[in-house]
Image (tube, rainbow, N blue to C red; front, side, top):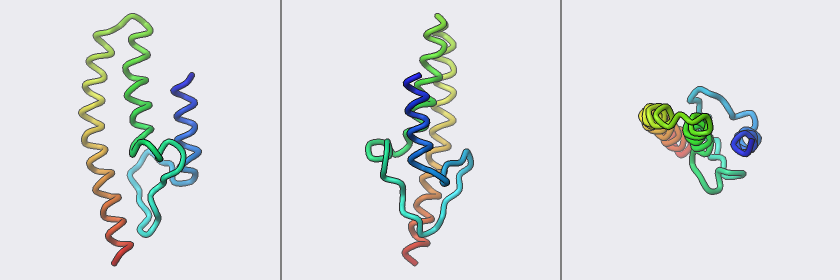
Length: 95
């Protein structure tokens, strides 16, 4: 329940900019309110914790480990793509 509350906080902080796709608005300032004051990608932290916590709560530590490792690999790529897009948008804003 706590993780879902944090997820709602993330979505509320992003407002209309929340999406599952990597979309940036050139010239738009990065979000720095809500959990974004402390973490650059708070929704990914929520997802990572969910992937570990749910199987552990069900007594499935091997599932927690395997899916956490798979998620870490996916997030490494996703965060790299997202950071590149944010850098590109910031550079376009300054041009």
